[in-house]
Length: 140
Image (cartoon, rainbow, N blue to C red):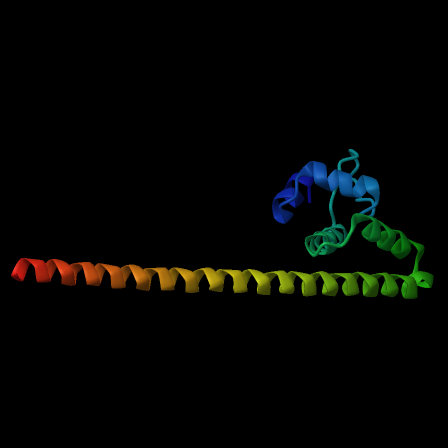
């Protein structure tokens, strides 16, 4: 696949794809006889992985380290697994923090809704009292 096709498929700019390759976030992409990038299935799988990891907040440095370890071979299996475990733990902690923030926002919204309901009830009561007074004055 050309860089344009891959760019469209994954929603990344061609510049981003080149950058990812240049910094080692994805292994070198094969090239055709003319020297143009020719993304194969493996390259696309790396892009999918990196896009997923970046979306979940994994730092670029950790991902570069992971790719580097991967390229060193099976001797780095434990190191790669440990890196992924560390990233998972960090993500779980961020999710816990985000859940606490969401809970706090929901609480604040609920308080506003309760206040608005009370204010609306009060306005309704005042309106009804005014109508009752106007009705009394017209009949007298």
